[in-house]
Image (tube, rainbow, N blue to C red):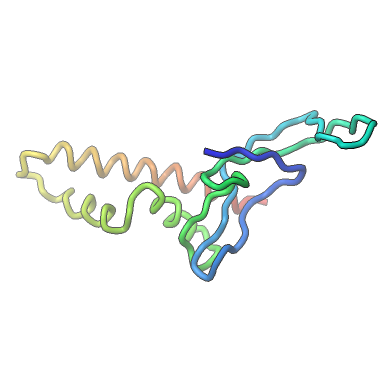
Length: 127
């Protein structure tokens, strides 16, 4: 995980036709003193740190449009491929299976992660 500090707040930008670069795990840093190459020490400012898998602290997600539903789906796909999601959903109905409890736990874990993603996306789209 890479972390980068910025002097302005970041949210997301289009990366390709089917991807967005999102800035997650925002950390507000009050009284941050930027590095200066001049003799004078700059005044403290509010800065923002982001962490992600890219060098700039961002994370690329699959999303064709900048809508909440697309971003939620894109974040979920970082952990669960579309095939994995489908398998987990289809396995939930196997109640007579000796792995019924395992299937229920997988579904609950995926749903919990999706709820976390909804919260993250809500913050990205908040003004």
